[in-house]
Image 1 (cartoon, rainbow, N blue to C red):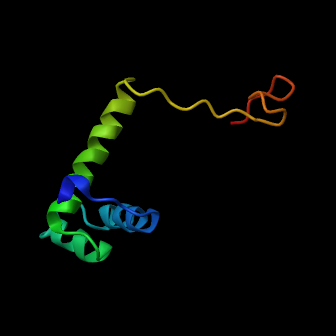
Image 2 (image 1 turned 120 degrees about the vertical axis):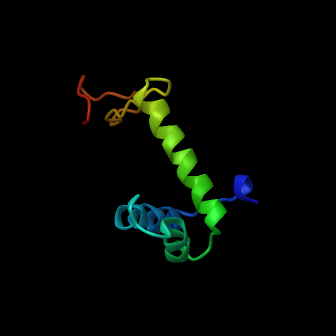
Image 3 (image 1 turned 135 degrees about the horizontal axis):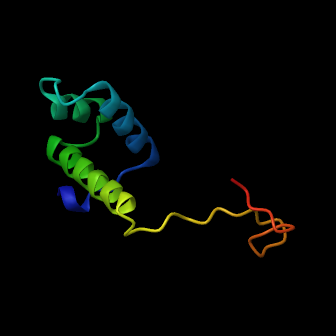
Length: 85
C-alpha cells in the first residue's frame, strides 16, 4: 500500500534524480520514474511526490522551522559563540 511504503536513502536519491529528468511535459512521467526507482509502483511514486510537495509547502510557509545547525565543539551547540553555516 502506498501510504505505508518506506523509502531507502538510495530509492529517494534515484527518485529525486528521476524528477529532474522527467518533467511535467514528459509522457508517462510517473511510469518512467517508477521504472527508474525500480522498487515502487506508480501509485507509490505519485504518493511519495505528493508528500514531498506537502513537506516543501510546509517549510516554505513557515509551519516547519528550519533546523538550527550549530557547531557543537563543546556539546552545548556553540563554540566560542560561533555558529557553523
